[in-house]
Amino acid sequence: MNAEPLALVSTFETPLSPTVLLDVAILSLLVVCAVAMINMRRLFGVAMLSGVYSFLSALFFVAMDAVDVAFTEAAVGAGVSTVLVLSGMALASRREKPVSKQRIYMPLVIVTIVGAALIYATIDMPALGDPNSPVNSHVGMAYVATSPQDITVPNIVTGVLASYRGYDTFGETVVVFTAGIACLLLLGWGSMRGGRNVSDPEERQALGAPTPADEAMARENEAAEIRNREGEPS
Image (cartoon, rainbow, N blue to C red; front, side, top):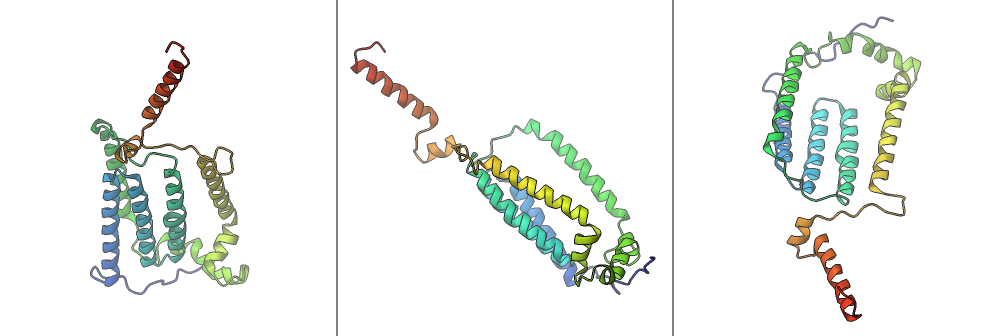
């Protein structure tokens, strides 16, 4: 069935429209948040900023009229992912280890090349809401035209995800379930061990708590005192 492309929007947004200004503001906040995460050395702060980044991404998707994607980003990115990162912090150091400046040049070159390629790819992108774009002139319009008769589901997005793309949705569900099980195993939930307790020597020293080396030396001194009291050579 050849569905005619529908005119999704009659007029495009002007450069100074409120929607465009909102998009620019959200994108600017995303850049600021990303730079802050790069410069942050406290892992708790990085976890919080990553949640803020996901929340801003969800706001941007809402501004782009992609509410279903925004809901997923808010639930998974800002919600579940932040909880898992905070849970993992209980088993790791609270501060990022320092990295020498010599090791950042190669990642910087790779990021620059990939970023330039992505920006170059946007030149051929159709305008936002263009009814003649491939996504609006091919199978997408067929879904819109035939979904009420084929599936009888009021929500077209639900019909596409549950029927037309059912196998794809099932595969994504399996991937998410497997990732959740892997996170639980890494955190040590459901085991007798209950996770590995890793302490941060810098934080323990700042709080005045003994470090593992101090505890080991104290045990050796205690053992030496016991041997001396028993008359054994130390």
